[in-house]
Image (cartoon, rainbow, N blue to C red; front, top):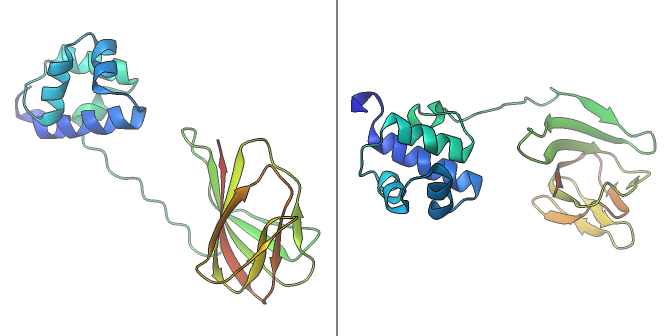
Length: 184
């Protein structure tokens, strides 16, 4: 392959993409039609893969060939306070600002919550498998399953099944939290 695709870059990309796919070396080698020892050598940085071998590996990993030979830049997303889509509750002083939508390969959304004391935000169950993760960053709140919410302080974290009735009740003015909604 020459100097245009250094073996260290290919080795790193192969291992990263194989792990991302959740496959063993044996599984990828079998799918690609190459020896397990060949793939082990390539991932360790020893070996000089042909274009055909790289093509077979990319097909086995279900990725474009370029992902193995061109370094990827990490995706960085910044959303400043107040940016993004904001939704408010009709039943309580509860504002959710969408920070990050769920990409097609994942099943989660991230919200910044800004909540005032008063009527608690009582949520109906979400679809089966939903888990909510909350981190309090300012103020205090009672959060969790409706039948047994837990008082949280800044820096506290809680997770609970979102497919059961749950509640968020601010106990101090200007309570702020981060909500990660995850679906299995």
